[in-house]
Length: 269
Image (cartoon, rainbow, N blue to C red; front, side, top):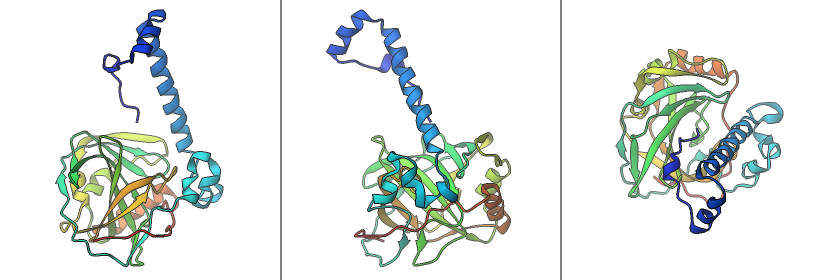
C-alpha cells in the first residue's frame, strides 16, 4: 500500500533547488507524487499477473515477467522442507504485539489482514514491525517431510525494509479464536476487502511454546525476492475442520508454492 507523503518533509539537494527556481515547488511535487502513484499502480497490476494454477502457476512465474526471474534462478528460495537441523541455541524473540488487525483483504491469492503501526518483534537487536498476516493451504513449508493443512505467515519489516516472516503451522483441532473473528466477515470475492470493527490480535496465531527454527529464504510469491529471514514455529496451532475448509473453498484451489531446494543453506534451531 502506498504510504501517505508529507510534501514538507521532502528535501532537495542544492542542484535541484536551483532548478526549482524555474518551476514552482508545488508543480514539481505534483509531478513527483504523480510519478510515484503511477509506479505503484503499475506495480499493483503486475503483482496480480500470476496465480497458482495453469499457465500462471508457480512453474511459470519466471516466464510471466522479467522481474520474477528469481523465482527460477534464485538459490535461497522459500518454502523448504525443514530438516537436518543445526543446534545454535536460538534466543527468544522479543514480542510486543497489540490488537491491530484492522482490514481484511481477499487479493485473489490469499486472505490477508493488514495491521496498524506499533506491533513489533525484536531479533538480533533489530526491531521489525508487523505489517500483515495471511494464510496458505496446504502449508508451504514442511517440517521433516510433514505437510500441514494450513500455514499462517506474519510478515514484518524493519525501518530499512528488510523482511522477516514468522510461519506458524496449523493442524486440525479446536477452533481458533482469531480465525473465528476474521472468518466471520471474510471477503469471498477477489479484489474485495472489509474493515474490521474490532481489531484482531495476531498474538492468537502464535503457539504458547515459541521455540522456532530459522533459515534464510525468500518471498513465496512473485517476485520471489531473497534476503528474507524465516522463523518457523516448532509447534503448530489448531483450527477447526470447518475453518480450514472455509478458507480453501474461498480460495477455490491450493495457494501454496511447491517446496524449493535447500542448496547450501542451514536450518538452525
